[in-house]
Length: 462
Ligand code: BG6
Figure (cartoon, rainbow, N blue to C red):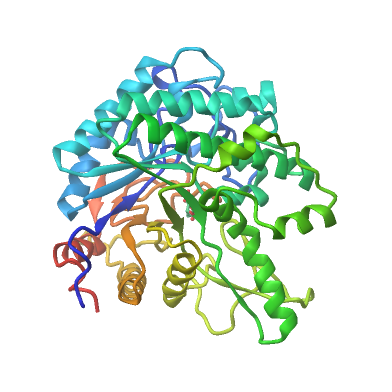
């Protein structure tokens, strides 16, 4: 087989806070992302008049989306993953009534996609939440946040049920273990007890959203979203194998709950040995039993685990991993491992037997605009080609893969450090880290390459 299945969905993935800008327009409230001018791991700041956060404008997708959607359509996209900014719908998070101007924006956006037969895939919460809920309730540390989230989810399911078929609950839900403010609205220094309690609330909220989606959008499909943090043992020493099993469970735990509908047995020991006592009740247990319809995940890199604590860890955007001596790395130190994607697809399918969707994969790199205006991003083409070849292999292995949305089909603000110089796009955006530039869009060499891959249903891959 050198073609992907006929109904395979091809596209790209973006997130509201990394593209939209318009941070105070049409009634939008302050989100946690608005307080992170240096990205997920940078210092959190209270906003002051006139201060600089590149995300305030980002790539101005809020105003330029018709042009961008047209370019995506030109590449042949059949799906576009984006998120709804919760703060456009409920600016503080706890209002009784939604903000009509925010709802109307996403109507316009989805209508624009419909013109080109691009199916929206919508993440309910991608690395942001209303700051009002953090300030006044303690973020996901509070049980009440479950109710606010459910209200928000029901509002958007009702509003867009004829326009949006694919939904995701929380972006990279497992990342809260590493970035609690971004994930669950808790201070970075929170202890494990607080973080796991907040995660519990978020898992319950996710399951309630799944249930609500099934009721309100019966023909829809709703998935979870995991940061695919695949780890290999650094050596074949049994200690390293065991450490790898445990470290992979750190993130698979989230999938286990969301797909199997209950906490896995291995977590009881983990909680006991770490002095964690979760406050849960019978209703939570029942809520969690609503499984997702499919599993989505991001994949950029793999890494290693070892029981030898003297080994230095390398940081990806979120996870700490021991570098693999057999793999090259990107300019940002993310190790490039196309075969890891095939492995991960097989692992997840063996474990869950549910359809999979690759909702993020791509290469962040510095691009050079040549004197004649060309952007020859052959490194990006090579990265994506090699990963897609492995997706095709996994499909041949028998894994059910619904689609592939590359991360950042258009240059956008990076999540970890809020940089624009780390570019992922097939489409270049003229803006630098200081905010200089015209915001004009320009097709890179990879634009034509991806267009050909989609048109040939993968037959153009090498
Ligand atoms: C994923 C996130 O972790 O990685 C995206 O879901 C993010 O929001 C992407 O942009 C790439 O990370 P970065 O830090 O290079 O933007």
